[in-house]
Length: 515
Image (cartoon, rainbow, N blue to C red):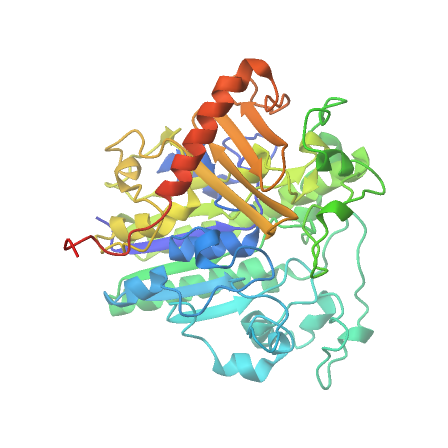
């Protein structure tokens, strides 16, 4: 039984961007992790956006339950988390990198320390390192690549590294949030064109920061003999696709495979699908009353050349990410912790880089967006070199981590303990997974039910939907929602979908009396 958990995550990584699955991209360190552990080829996110999924990772709850159901919402601070459970048993709990449990804006009713202007208040971050959502110690950042959101603990680290001009490598701060003495708006740095290298020195790239600080905390725990739950939360390969040299030139756009899609693929799909491939799409039917947009509700049109440049840059990001994950894995070995540490690698959701004509995040529940990489390792506990096709949901991570450590699993958690599958004792526990995706109740609110063979997506208060036979049509090209030959299958899946929704409800305590 492991004593420690090392949780390593990427952001918006397609499950096929791993070297052992895709010879076009190099990931030697994740490949060796896979060889020494177990890989899952049918792992699914609980929600295809960041905040809901990350909140589910630490709570074991579905977004509809924990409340952070969409980007721009907040996980209530009093929610029970995996960190709370582990702290009670004396584990050190630490998070380095991206949290994203709170929005970038605040209101009179809802505060957020991940929002402006606190985001850039260096005095605040010098004195704050937790507790935060059950984590005893946190060091946070919020930006992807060169976004203006750069700040927090990451900025303080860059200053300690001798780069007080760190703002020069990021886009100008958002209007109204300049700090006194901040000359960032006059920086020579400007937005780049597709495929252009990011000029930030590798030594202060956030990958280097996350690896260095994770390794330092791990070393502290090793010296003190204290067991730990450490989360190394990386930001890549989330768009914008951007990476410094030598990774920016590592992959030739002429040598990458650009996905294609057949003409008319969206003819049998819900009506909003076709809008994505228009230069001037109309998503007004799905507009949100609060004025906030939806990721993916826009034009996805890009030239073949731009897609190729983006893929090459994204591959470079993945290879650089892999290098720094390797530094963390090396530290586990160097400290003699490999035999007692469960390592888990996954991503919050997938990505499109041309599949079905789509790019980046979208509101289309294709496998490219919903499936995620999942690799686990613990020598002597988890079978080495095994590939598993059992259905996995990332809502199960919290209860499974607790179960693998031999700790009590709160009855309030909705995820299931997958420990028997992870240890190779059982072929499967789940016969389905459910993916939620809600923006507003009546504009865009959908859920997907996935079994071993079939996949069904239901849209709230809409008569259209999706039904795919993944065994006969792995590319999800033919929608059988209205096909008479699939009427009985559709009826059966709708009933199983209802059963699945009912099974999600937790039972906070057993019934102990008749009244």
